[in-house]
Amino acid sequence: MFKKILIANRGEIAIRIMRACRELEINTVAVYSEPDKNALFAKYADEAYHIGPAAASESYLNIDRILEVAHETGSEAIHPGYGFLAENPGFARRCEREGIVFIGPHAEAIEGMGSKIASKEVMKAAGIPVIPGSDEGIDDLDKAVGMADEIGYPVIVKSSAGGGGIGMKVVREKDELIHTIESTKRVAKSAFGDATVFIEKYLEEPRHIEFQILADSFGNIIHLCDRECSIQRRHQKLIEESPSPVMTPWLMERMGADAVKAAKAINYTNAGTVEFLYSKGDYYFLEMNTRLQVEHPITEEVTGVSIVKEQLRIASGEKLRYRQEDIVQRGWAIECRINAEDPLNNFTPSPGKLRRYRSPGGPGVRVDSGVHTGYTITPYYDSLISKLTVWARDRDEAINRMKRALYEYIIVGVKTNIPFHKAVMNNEFFRKGELTTHFIEDHNIIADVAKVVEADKEKGATLASAIGVEDKKVAAITAAVGAYIHGEKTVGKDDHKR
Ligand code: MV4
Image (cartoon, rainbow, N blue to C red; front, side, top):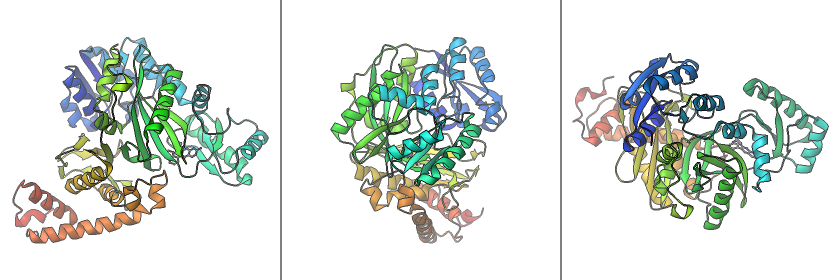
């Protein structure tokens, strides 16, 4: 096992990796940008080094500087986390060339899964169901028209080098097809430097169900069951759960076997995720993510496996310590991504100083976060404050526990999407597990958010007046209510002053 590794990331995921290292008695090296110099993750590490200014291109994406620190500190390996350099094959190759273990798959696997057309071809050849569509990039418009007629409308035009929904457009009428192909090619060229596009049958109301994979360097591959990730906004996941409400033992068996087959087909090693679209009882390979995912905690909670520790063990050359029959999914886990954003203003980021921060706790509650009271959420990186995960024996209890945890959360100084999460947890269709990737629009959740904000104000005002706080400002009330609930201090008459 390694004695020292460098974490080339920041915030909650950096702390998550450092926690696994501390439990394995691995020393940790943090790298931080100027705005992160006082961040919790930099303090948590055994060593911490400044790598550049705020701009990611000059800090967390600065390969030369990161490798320089790795060499200087004698780090044997680098964990990239997610985002930044996590799926950068050039970085993985640089590490391998410079004798530093990249904690993730080989560069070839990252490269291969970066092309949506190539990854579909590999999976189709391995006998994994893929969405009906073109087997190669579109370079002949007449051929494309013929193909769309064969597939049947609606179809979707997608960028092969794309991801996260960029460079993808639904076509419902034949006369829109050619214009859409040409415009999508332009978007793909400018966004990814690769104009290759392809078409597929458009699945109207799919679920996004993904499987966690672990693969060692000896050909052993297992899956750690499923995650339902359908509640997304602009291709950003907001709420994830394990298992999926539609999962059955038979579906688990088939999708799990196909997820393992997908990893085997590309000689995958380390942790990865196979994404499927599920529609009307059928499922189709969508793409494979070659990194640790943000939502990994729900899988850790229902299987008891530390995915990050297994990544470290695999990267250090150990054999998988689990066989497939050792993996048991127990209970239900739900994760809400708590972001500094305003759900009543189109989820606009809301950076700022956390004047008060207190996370929930108690039975079955896990909070992965890198913030604290007094911390400033900067506008330079993503707006993630924390990931709130709950575990319970069944889905109903997990939803009730999530509602309780959201009620306890105190964040004063920035707007958050907590009211959004409360609105979803209160939604009858969510309670029934009737989810699709269009859930937020289909159930007009945003309209419910406004009602939640109003109700919270009322609740805060009522409780605040009960405890003698004159001022009606929600923030002051939240702070006072929080202090009162948690007995941090008795609420004085000046508590409402900003
Ligand atoms: C699709 C689809 C429906 N039909 N492909 C979204 C980004 C990328 N992961 C692929 N995506 C989709 N591809 C076909 N043929 C619907 C989506 C989609 C989606 C997929 C998963 C999770 C959330 C989504 C939100 C919107 C669209």
